[in-house]
Length: 126
Image (cartoon, rainbow, N blue to C red; front, side):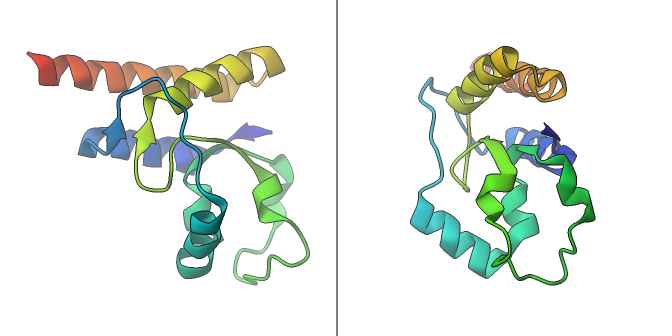
């Protein structure tokens, strides 16, 4: 498991755009919504919502578009939101999980994102 840089950039953009929910609840994508999202928008777009990606995905041919040979959702971990908004609670949960599981790069990225989110909140409160 390693940091999904595409997801990291996507999350930073969500924060800049204000597409964030600033609460302590973790919100996971609904499986039905996730399936619809994957079908209509594709696997690479779905992947943007997960900070963790399995190392062996680098070699997978995204153009095939056939996920029948693998369960795509098993290749991603640490969702940053619900496919619409980034959730503060998700970042906090990612930090806790990655500290205990030893994923230092994902942990560092989640902490940086949480810091960005908190700075945005502080600016909006001034």
